Length: 123
Image (spheres, rainbow, N blue to C red):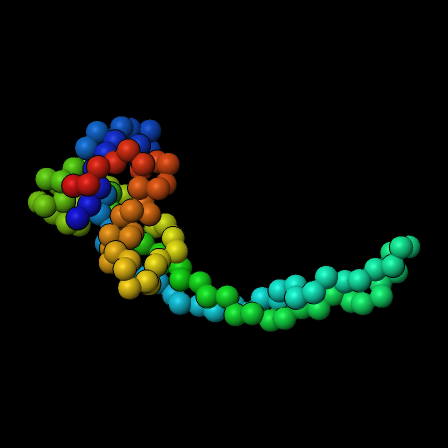
């Protein structure tokens, strides 16, 4: 599984670049966030009659970080998986729903949502 397309490498155009997700890491985090429960009550001159109330909620985040290796082309990758010309990472929110695609498929779909890779094709 990989993506293929035109890649700009330090000002040079690589016509059939081969992008492969080589590592995937996700963290299931929860952060406490104060959320407005009731609006403040003010009188006509703006004096606070009742203060706003807040409640704490736990917000879940499912952040994934993917590491991608860029090869000159698919043949280069097959000949030597360590001969990549560049590597980069990107992040996205992974879905853990029972109906969600597997994480690797989600990673490639998220990569294609990045403007630079939106025209890449599955390889």
